Structure formats: structure tokens, C-alpha cells
Length: 350
Image 1 (cartoon, rainbow, N blue to C red):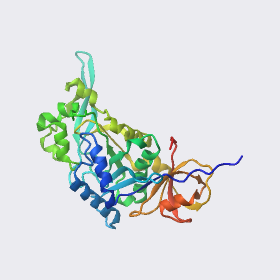
Image 2: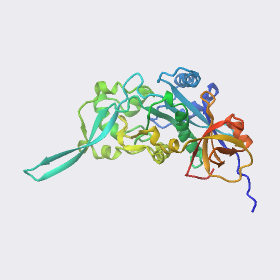
Image 3: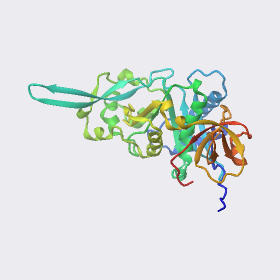
Image 4: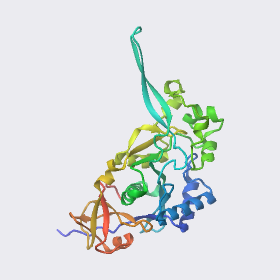
């Protein structure tokens, strides 16, 4: 039986550059109320692009860097997704979350013991590396593109570990409707700030949330005392967050410990070394040839400013990975180059 060659890589992840500003504006404009890591503000987005380009270019990393990536469809052309990394959460201010805890109250006289869910304002995740700004064109949600858009960031972190923390976290948008009504915020934060959810999110605009500690109570919040709607919203996801959240869960992130202080959505976190893509990553030598079989592989070059990553079906051995010429060109490498490769075990339609 003759095996047909598999196609070259279709999707390419690379650092954002100045020409990507219209794409960032397009994703920002389409974001629901409360999704503000890319606020619809041209000046802000332009500044963030400049910061990102400087982060990729600079040799002297301080920890305040933000790295933005663009995902291209090499067949159709154009940017179809954006994702990012903040090197250190709360670099200049503490990074606040709610920590899920349970306290036990008991009465020997009454023979009653209760286990009560509480939320504690904390800054445990200050200084962790933070995933930010995951946006994908809806037309590509059911392809492999989101896998590359999310997971390739871990290969970049592993490739340049000296720039990042040993733990990675990601906030996921919680429950809010199209008008911006957020049950968790209305029951908790609004009582101390006197602002609705869209206003408080616009105020932060993707910036620090450290000012929260100035007005929020430091004592625990007893969840049973909250309205039922707010209790139900704790740990729940906005529909736009379901896809990136599922990828993070598959990676091995812990989603049970922390919540976003605004909308109560889950904030995942885990040690970098424990995550699936990092565990599976190998350094292999690029070889060229016709690829006729092989599983799905996340592949990136060893660059920083010229980082490139693809998702491709490819043959691997103990030392080499065989790629077609177009894929090698997309990665910006020649045969013999060192590549970081991690197997992906969730194949879906392209």
C-alpha cells in the first residue's frame, strides 16, 4: 500500500508586530463585556504592541514584559487568533485572587458539624507567569488552531525559562450577560465599590487590580451568605472562556483553588514542569523529506524575537523530526536545526 504525503503545516504562531494592530482591534471589538485584557482602545493596543515587540527584542528581561503572539492561517492568509504571556503577574503591584477554602464548625453539645465554603482575598499568585489575551476567530474554534494558540506558549516559556516563573496561571472569564450583569460582582464587589461590572472592568482596562485591596474586606466571605445566583456563579465560565479553559484543563492546570476577584471565574495555576506539553517536549534535529505518517506534533524553533511554532503531522525518531520543506520554511529553519517538539494527543479535524 502506498501512503499519501500528509499536508504541510497550516497554522503558524509568531510574535505580533506593528502591522497586527488592526487584528488586535478586531478581536478587542468582538470581545464581550468584561473581557478586557484587550480593551477596545487603539492607543492602549498600540502601546501594548510596542511593549510586546520590545519584550521579544530585549536581551535584558526584568519580569515586567508582555509577549503577544499572532496565529496565521498559511493557506487562507491573515491573522486568526491572538494570545499572550505576562512574564510576572503583579510585577509592580500585588496580584489578587480569591482562594477557595473550607472551614469546619462543630458543636459537641448539639452534635452538629458543618463544613462551610469561604473565599479569602489573597495574593498567592503574585509573581507567577500569566497567560493572557486568548482570542480565536469563531470560524476556527473546531479546528486544531486553538491548540497551537494556547499550548505553543508553553514551548516558548520552556525555551526561555530564565524570563519566566516556575508557575503559570490563567484567569478565565466568569458568568456575565450581554448587558454586563455579573451575579458574583453584584453580590460582592459592587457593595464596596458602588460600580457595575462593565465600569469596574473598564476602569482596570487590562491593568493592575491591586487597588481592589484598598476597598475590599480582608475578612473571609462566607459563601452560604451570598444570594443563590452568586453562589451558583462561583467557578462558572462565560461561554467565550469554555474553549481555552478546556485546553488548560487538558494540560493539567489546577482549577479548584483560586477565583477571579471580579466575576468569580476560575483562575487556573500549576507548576510549569507539571504541564503536559512541557513534560513531553524534546529537543530534536530538523530533517527534510516527504512525511507520509506520524502523529500530531507541536514544533517550535529556538528563537525569541523570531519565534515560530506550528502544529503538524510529522515523523519522529529518537533524535530527528522529518518535516516537509514548506513547514521548515514557516519555522524559519534549515535541516540540522534544533527544534523543540511535543506530541499532541487530541487530534481533531483541521
